[in-house]
Image 1 (cartoon, rainbow over the protein chains, first blue to last red):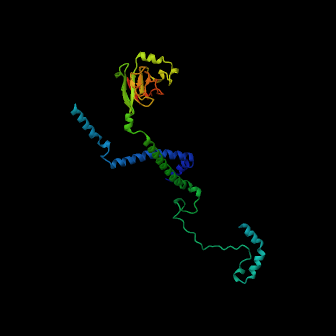
Image 2: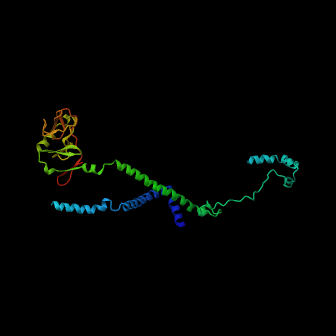
Length: 70
Length: 234
């Protein structure tokens, strides 16, 4: 573990340029992960209430309605 | 401090004399010197172990040997703060900018698709586009030839016919008079194009002002000719 941290310090943190690059790259990764996790939590809490959870039932009804009209 | 010691050295004989003059048994034992050190061997060095990082629990550990792990921890803290700061700043800016963009219902009304083969030659058809009337005119060959022959320098708002019509067969203009915003009447007026009944502005079949109070030609919206004779305005 210490070896990994030492390598990280030697190769990334010591130079400001590589540190900033690592921060920006990390921000991209963090954004993806954080958004996925927070969206997952939101959808889990609102299970069955969102449009994408109920869309299929309305689609079938609409098709049924169209057939009746025809 | 150093200069003070030096000065006291110069004063050594006088100090010596005074030391000897004092009747004190203890002072006589000490060899005569201006510098007297009292070693505080009884002072206990406190244990700072609770405040030390794990790498430097041993107070004699060399700083250079443990620098990598100690500084890496500090930089990771700073880097983590930077990453979440960048994310927060980006989210705030994105949310703010997207709040200024048009909503979906507005965007859905922003474009209109027109089937050009439904408009007969020589006819002007009116559509509603973004709350304004839109004139689409299928021009005849005579009209195209007539507008192309007009001397551009003689016009109030000089624009050649080719500038105004991407496809010479089709004129697409917003049907709002540039004078005070009335809706002109199609196929009327002295030039066969549009005539504004409010104050008598005459537009030709390229939508250019030819006579009357209006200062500018009829406005042309952005439009493209898609495949299959489909005209998309917006």
